[in-house]
Image 1 (cartoon, one colour):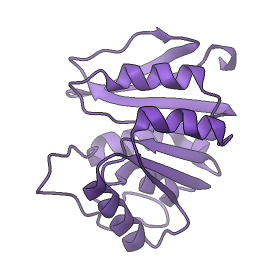
Image 2 (cartoon, rainbow, N blue to C red; image 1 turned 90 degrees about the vertical axis):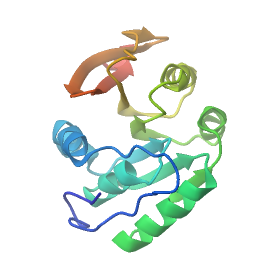
Image 3 (cartoon, rainbow, N blue to C red; image 1 turned 60 degrees about the vertical axis):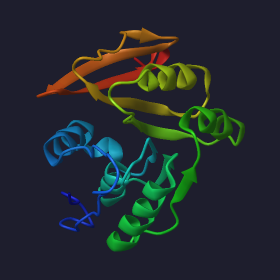
Image 4 (spheres, rainbow, N blue to C red; image 1 turned 45 degrees about the horizontal axis):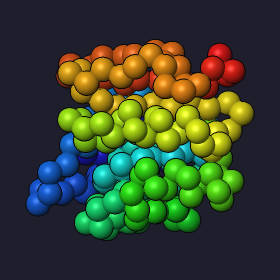
Length: 185
């Protein structure tokens, strides 16, 4: 696993052999950031279920203004810190807490993000639950996009609250679903 473009291009990122983790592949990551293109420049990026920090670090490398990482497992918090340091990034917020409890906290703190990436365990209800929590939170910049990485056997609804699916892209067994608030179409 490595950073594939931007200021930290080529830097290797550490993963965990001890714990089950499914980092986003370079192929999917490359396609995701090709789709986002210049939208990544200068935005606040929120990496939910951050794991190794792979996606949030790629966002920083490609010009995101700041990234907030949210991860519940402490062993992965240490991986995120290690990978940020290896890439020379500092000043990032790392939240060691449950994602579904963090979203209201971010709302209460009036934090705003232009891009939110969600990568929960594939065989769980966490993708839908997280979208439901985001639908009632006010943590979006005026222009925003939410991306959910999920398995092809777990399709997501077209609409959750006022969030609508704009696009779904398939890469083998992996899907990327892109959501926005209805009023932003």
